[in-house]
Length: 403
Image 1: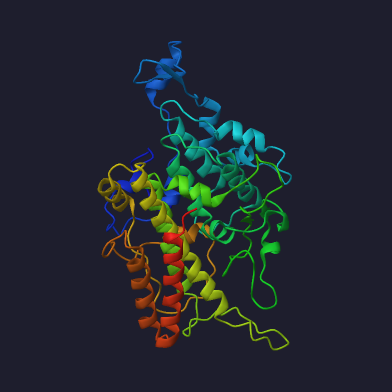
Image 2: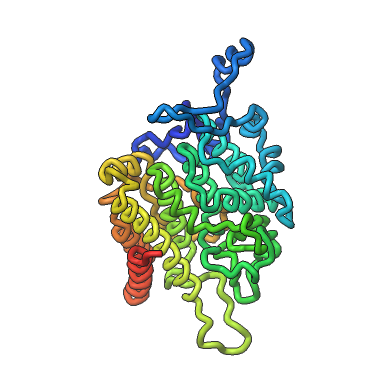
């Protein structure tokens, strides 16, 4: 994270008002301030007191819970060791050990929050400008696979949401891919390099030297399926996790818009040697804005569905909590940028101001950013209108598509 903070629990600085522009870098604050064990814990251990492994239920029955070991807690302060512990290897041979570490229906005390910090230490870029390694990218895949289909224990969702945000490009690009057509759980920066026409299946405006997680990969094993859409759906139950994901997608939109040309095209596009009516400079940008709109529409779909089935019992309270955890508004630069930031920097970009309007009106949040970009950059009205229509179609389709 780029700046300090005094809190050390899962709430951290996320309880600060959304309009506090001077505070940023949520993802990295969790890396710079690792979990510190309280003095009381050492007193308990020194006294030889056994820490209970069960929690009492309301019906006086006992529900077994997982007790996070001291060796696991130590990984929070040792990112290299955390990555080694969660890296499944190229052949995913160590996926079982990752599942054993993370997959629990119930976790004692603050254990779920600790596991979230372990994930953050293992998969996150430790500083601005630092690209993800292949080991970190594989670890992110293993984490998503380990919790696939799991109803997450309370406290774990924010940590996993930070991981998804840290890999916002990969988590977006990989949805719906065919697993048997992909090279593995992660690819090197060389494998992700754009082709002669400036296109890469791993995303737009990719940073040099950064490995990428291939969440859509599958080796056919039911224990190695990193279904990112299902994970996002599960994370959306938690207001803090929802805010982290929503922030990341809106930041990603600003990131893309400020790199498009003044005509809404891809500056990296190179026409093919043979004329091709399907190859256009606007194809990539069209796909990029539709994808962000689709992801935000999906978040709103999950929110509505959980409010309907009672998973979110008080929608007003949920929305209030989301807004409290949301950092603010993300608007693109007024001039075209040619930089290619690493993924962690995309989600971690500073806010441009407080949230404006209804945060849960995803359409408004998308369109206001697009409109201001088009005005600042002098984008032709016809092109701006076409982009807005594509975003609207994708947002509505995702919002109403029940799966």
